[in-house]
Image (cartoon, rainbow, N blue to C red):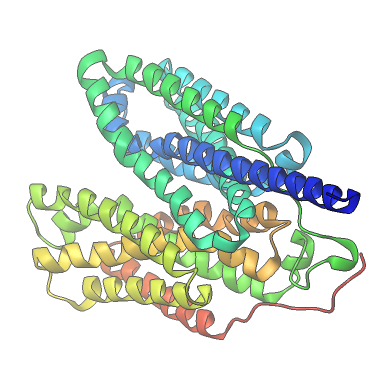
Length: 411
């Protein structure tokens, strides 16, 4: 064997080892992300605790339920700055910190003696921890798999959705056997361990080529916000979140008060929403790798419009009620899943956490807007009409918006 042949074989062996190493890192990061996302999704079991906390604090249930609105807003705010934290500390350290903060928030919630302390611990602190870990781990994992962004988003956010379902049974069992305060302690311990383990398995995704190789669609947050496409995407996202979060949050009340259905039938809407939400995440997430992602969002908006049309103009039978909620939940889950990849299509992968984080503020704002519109206009019909109009506008924007582009830069 010649020297040249030996060197060639050695180079080949080294390349193979590097490929295997990168492949292992990607798989471990995906596994860690799924574990962490499952635990982070547990915050959506919050409604299980409203009645118990209201009784403990001797306040109306609505006062306790408002803490989840604060949590949603804090979650969105934390998501918008998680990119900066990753730049400084790395994904592992920030994820571990988020897990510890989540445990601390639930520990303090167990000892909350006033509504103000509940808002601080279960609202601001828990929401900040969840938002930091959620978007950071999601966008980092998507950047590791640029060739399968939709499928990876579906797996990651699907785990987040399954977390709410899995912890529903865990927390219900804990409430039955150990009581309210201890449930928060056990929940916090389980979630913290899972998020920390997930964080230890993760690695920071490599940055795409810069300089003369900089992609024409690679935008910083400041550059992205100067493009009209950014605000069009932000409005579409806010609208879907507003419709989804409002309807999901008052589904039982819609069934009883608006559709005139019995308590048991209205309560079953929770299961319908959970299955449709998960279906939207998986179906539209995978579909987004097979067709233009903006068209997938258009399909999601059509689904939500169909659901809102049934609520506004349809006869409220049991099947129509479930179908309407299913269409809206399917749209919401699918949009949440596809949007990280869509934002990377428009503004590049390098600044995905920052760019999507800013758009993700629409999650918190949308959750508040639905409740505010309902309070101002009164009644479900008026609120549904406003949401219907915003969905129609968003559908039109989704058909018109095109990804920005520019001449490659040396910067």
